Image (cartoon, rainbow, N blue to C red; front, top):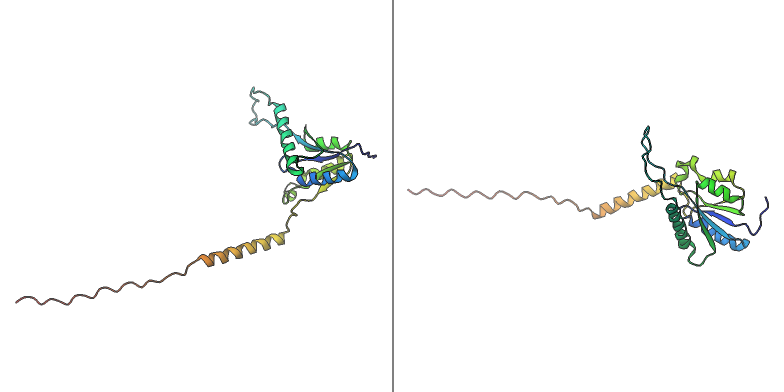
Length: 198
């Protein structure tokens, strides 16, 4: 595989998270390599909700150009928020699944840069993770940027929960007031009997 300076560094950007860590890394690396950066977001039209066993109603097809324009706007907003108004990043919204779109783009790229999944997501959706699939299908090296906040271990989560419970207990104890026992007031002393008139 021969790479040239004319080939870009491609960044796969998530519409949901913005992939800010991947964008920052790619922008820094592009200066070192003298390469341009292309940020790509993949979008797909929504699937119609059709009840099982029924025939699709005669509805209009969604306006794909509007969906693509919205994805393009979201991508440009993410790049602007991460890199500021002065940048040389080309932004492109491409129709298709992220795996297909980014795999195709990688064959004309120096690097394909991705954010790692959010902490906690990797264990839940291991089969659906994008990076492992692209490692085997991409036409260039794949760089996966670690998250800004590493996932906490189970031990760390237990310690954090214990600290939180101890703090809550201490706050509750400080705010609580000791119950005041009130003795019932004594019955008024009975009046002495009045002498009856004779």
